[in-house]
Figure 1 (tube, rainbow, N blue to C red):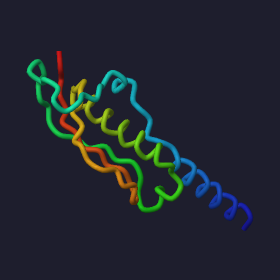
Figure 2 (figure 1 turned 90 degrees about the horizontal axis):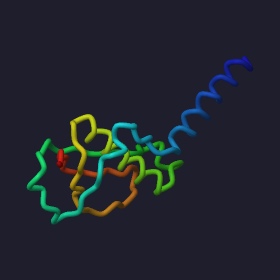
Figure 3 (figure 1 turned 90 degrees about the vertical axis):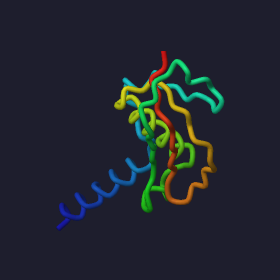
Length: 111
C-alpha cells in the first residue's frame, strides 16, 4: 500500500515539476532568428506557417509567465528548424497568459 502511494506521489511530483519548465530549444534551432516586421524578405524563401505553444489547463498554474513565453518561442523555433527554416517573422499580438502561450509566425530560409 505504501509503495503504491509513494509511486503515485512520485509520478505526480515529476509531472508537476516538468510542467513548470520551458520547452527546451533543440540544437538545430539555435541559429533560427526572429526577424522584425518590415524586414526585407527578398533573399528568403517562404516555407510556411508555424506556431509555438507552451502550457495547458493544468500546467499553467505551475509555470511562470517567462517560462510560458520562452517555451512557446523555443517550440516555434524548433518547428521552424524542422521545416528547414532559419528565420521567423513573428505575428504581432497580445500575450494574455490565460492557460497557455501561443506564438504564430511565418517561417523563411534566408541567405
